Length: 274
Image (cartoon, rainbow, N blue to C red; front, side, top):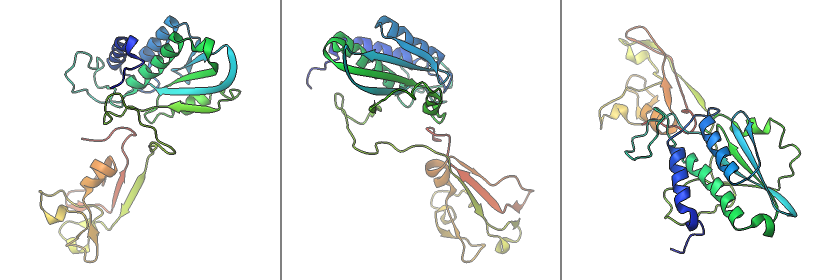
């Protein structure tokens, strides 16, 4: 592998990322994370504004020569998950974890700033770079919160760059994608209508759900005929709850009574059930 240009401060990057990994915070609660970002920016003597969109930070890095204005964005929030990793730098916040790699995203952005500064970019380069440290990427509309402050309305940004960690890539490689790189998360709600009724009269039911069965049970397989409703098809709700959605509700019904509706939908963006 060729020598990395980051090698002179590789240990600094590792230490910074591990420190951030230990203090994961949910969207709009990233106070410790933002404070660490501001601490590093102060050390690097880079001007910045904090509390943009509640907890966001915007750093401004300008060269001596005039040139284009571009931006680099790094998200900084974590997920409500318990960390199972047994490492010295595991999460110190119970029930929270940097499972999406935003600790790495912040580290990369700060590493870019340090690399540019130590190599004299302000003297030898041109233009200006805005570094956005965005809160609440995990479904909290943190980018919108920053834009709604109005501070970017007069900024003629020509291009915005960002990256995402990909543990499937070999160490030392960077993947570039033209066009759409990642899908957005959104919420979807589905109502499946059937016909409810008493459990003692299954032929009269058009059940909007199927029971969970043992492995190999045809009644639990997707698209199996519904014995109680000729012409109707049943589906495996496990596929909804584990892959295509996160919730599946039929409500509460009296004993032996089958509901007429089933609601399903997506999980909280960025978090899937086990």
